[in-house]
Image 1 (cartoon, rainbow, N blue to C red):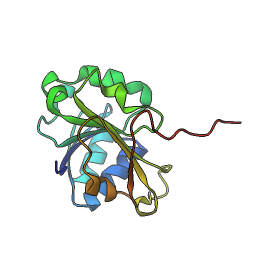
Image 2 (cartoon, helix red, strand yellow; image 1 turned 60 degrees about the horizontal axis):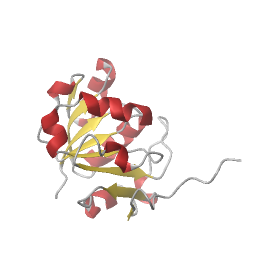
Image 3 (cartoon, rainbow, N blue to C red; image 1 turned 30 degrees about the vertical axis):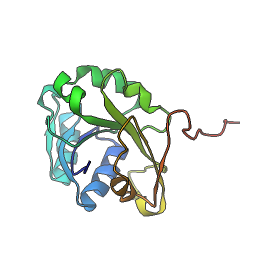
Length: 168
């Protein structure tokens, strides 16, 4: 599967950095969904996309729906989506702390795409020196696509997902 046309859900730091990098790599961010109109329109404008604040207006034909939102928002967001999108779409979230299986009750094709770095609004992300992790449900997320965002994509399953060391 070639991933070219993407709908980006979220308007925060991760969404901004991933969207910018994806566009720089020749991908199309077709649409940006955000709760706040000003934020979604600003990010969409910077990426050459359209903006929406209405789940029912999500483009139904994207190759990937990339969720760059908080962990706690994931189930609430997916409950609001049109069934037609959830049944056919490839949906990935960007949380390193949440397994891909959180998406399983809501869609058939899902995964995690997680760049292993911190994001700051004042500093550009360095995707070329940071690896990324991918955890697809069934069909592998296109490795050349994920590699274009970093030095390499390590595939893992929810059971082999690297965990953070315990905090002291």
